Image (cartoon, rainbow, N blue to C red; front, side, top):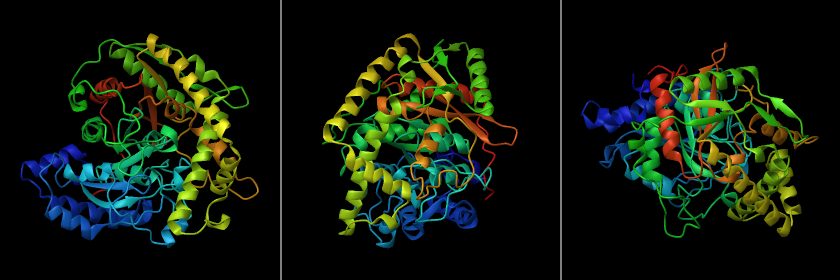
Length: 477
């Protein structure tokens, strides 16, 4: 069935003449029409333009393969853009042009069949904005697919499309990858350009890429997207060879540290959910069986309670700026009643962060990054739970007027292992190696040194060969 194939396999069908681009696209559209009412994954269908593009697909490495684009950061020329915001949706804001990422995917032959759901401005690890019905986890429709790239993850896990655009400012690629049994890699800061209209997002916290059903798809797409574009404020270290070539390279015996406890803002250390601890234990044993040395270890700087307030100082200023930019697009100020209580509260808090305090937060983070980097002088990788619990019920992160900030602290409890590496800019990935007794996916996170996506792909491919990924949520064609 097409729904069970990854993007590379679908492209091979076209290359061998066993399927046409139009057939792949029509099949994906049929699956979306059949299942999306339950999943809430695709919020903007682009079927007519997709069929036309399929009939004129360029001869790239992914010719005819359907893909969806998250409705945040990346833009699809001529298609609506809302960033999860109801006022932008109501105003029917249309993106004037493709972003660099989207244009590159098109040149490679990908066909965009729709745009996917996200939380308001990508703030929360769910996809339940006021603007659209919630995205639901294909493994259990009562649970969240994670977020903020939840729509993309739900669509990929269900097999509506084989791969989907996603981005990550605090875990928004890795969290939904964990919740939906996918492979999700957050690249090194600056690896993928935000051109032509943006230099970076939130000062460098946010990264673009995809969620995928296989390691090879993720590597091949990063090969397409990686690299400096004119005007970028910075770029990642150059890759040594194509990432797709790394998959067959044995990583050699590695030294891997692991940890399942995290530090709460109150200063106490808390163990992750037993299912997440079991996932890390399983991964540690599998890695050891593959010849790696695995032991309990943690970067010292991860124990610093300043992480949360410093990160939030940066994040709330970003929310303030995004609300201001959306207001500028509308030609009027966005009002409090038009957004969720959390979004408004964060935007108001951002106005209180003075310039020196914002700079001080970044300076603290840069110093913490140097302290953390010392860990990767002793270890090659760090292994953690991707998130601290199995996929949570829909509504877990709903914000209320009487306590609007509670949702962001619940999010922090879910993802204490992901956000720090948006701060340091290191690459990290979620690998789907475990399911709990209820059949829910539980991802594990691997973190590498700055610029070492090559090592993550080598090890993830080694794990995938040893234990092929199981996609139990795929909907039949």
